[in-house]
Length: 178
Image (cartoon, rainbow, N blue to C red; front, side, top):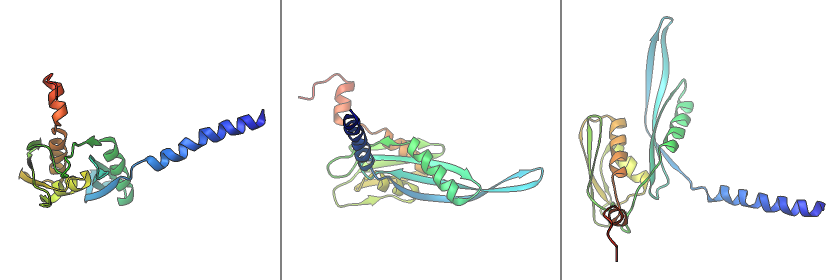
């Protein structure tokens, strides 16, 4: 009887170990750390705000923002926030996006166009970081409007969220893909 329980326990433990190994490694990139202050009755209270882009370089990406009393905690909190905001991005075989797309957030507007293989990521600032962490290697992007790093990163994620695949369009229009 005792040996049966040990075998059952071994069977239960084995999948847990493999699940840990299966978890994808997320890449995090720090976009900006800024020192912010809050004026209170007792004076100014300083804290740090971190903006982090997190992704698996295989079609998942998210932007996280958090504030804390020190830089390390702000980074950790922003990383956790980024994991909560992960989205799945369709990527073509040439590591590009399927079609041209626009994204807006605040006063920022992002235009992304697919590019030929080998052209690289042609983008600037926070948009470039978002695209690299998402795993997109060939794309042309232009940011219009504001130069705010957080809003540009969120506009880029919004644009990537607007991407659709061929199969999704067929399903939406009730067309057979044959």
